[in-house]
Length: 121
Image (cartoon, rainbow, N blue to C red; front, side, top):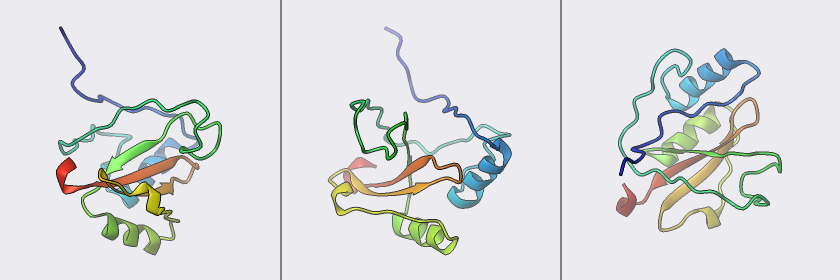
């Protein structure tokens, strides 16, 4: 049986796509997503539906939450804070899976950053 082998793209609407792509490159180190194909490092991916009434994503109308794997969450959080970006952490977000924090892009989209635990890399 044929099967899906990974996520081929993630597409979303933006008021200012060029400015938002530049923000993702500047603050998260993602190559200019408006011009090139981003080559990711191999690693775990979670693809999970949540209940429609979850408050985990933030605002009620939010239909998605992207989660990016990071190699050093403490350094990433320090860089983001130094750039004036609010970083939210909660003890209950950290688990056997690893450590997490939450930020929002300039258009208010939530972004979860995840440093997988050694057993999940």
